[in-house]
Length: 397
Image 1 (tube, rainbow, N blue to C red):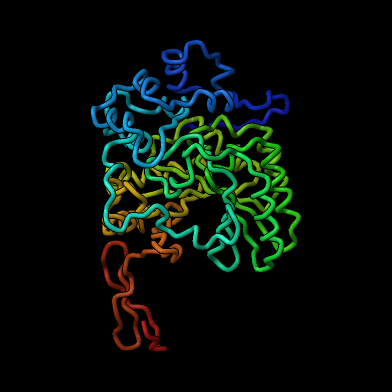
Image 2 (cartoon, rainbow, N blue to C red; image 1 turned 180 degrees about the horizontal axis):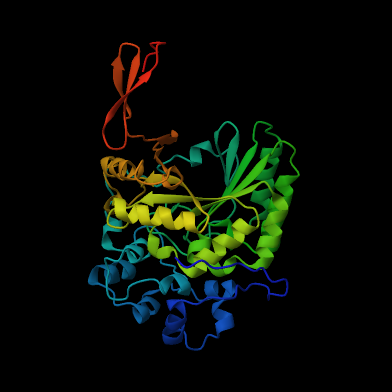
């Protein structure tokens, strides 16, 4: 991918991110000819013009019968919403295109498999106050909004996101969550998620960050988001200047496929990185989307080039209607085995299952310790060769 230099201009108009030069421009001219370049580059315009119904979607892609029927019937979990920018990345003639499969519904979503659940991770059971999940001893998940710029069809929180019930901002719920965090001194780490926190206006997001930063025992803050991928226009100079005031701040970004690594996304991520914000990726393993070594390697290498550290590769959660996305766990192990040793360790994420029923994240690792010979441990490397390591303590393995 071409390297793009980042220049945060102090006089950049608020709400805009300049300098886009991709296929998105020709897409705009074809399907949004009334929109100016300035409007296209404005994240608020992108949100106002999200593609949300059959008529709008049919205007830009040739829907398969399966897709069309799924949209007409309302989808199994939640409605369609795709930013114009992300829609520009979809193949209008190929319903099997990986990116298209992640955002356009199909009738398989109506098939509920055994052991799928509305809340498979039992987050609601670990919610001491509304919009807060306290599962691990030292950290909490703060669900600050139920709004996303683009709806992923395999979303773990489809029970909350895209159902039309809520809004960006519920001050009373925020206050109760903050009061809980203040009264729980073991909490040192707060992860803002939702929905997508970066869809909040700057002032409301800053209010949250500043309020949490004033709690003495909260050592650092994290944001979980897909906005840099589906709405890179949101990563404005103004937003970045605000975020850098709340270090230590970390951002985890939901990436799915190397086709998402556009110049716009590169610029958004590099802008955040230049502000001193460590970036990590979280990817869900999806059948027919990214479930092969080559695709995953291209994604992980591309992430490193835009200064995003591969963090987690998740097995797809058993949310209602998601069976067509789930792969066997053996497929994920095969991918990790195909990365480990064959590329830099920085490009190898941790493969994990978020255990159904509320067990938390459990890493899945290829077996490298294969036994003992006397005072030596037997280890298998990435090529399958066995090596001996002196380990006379005879610890149990």
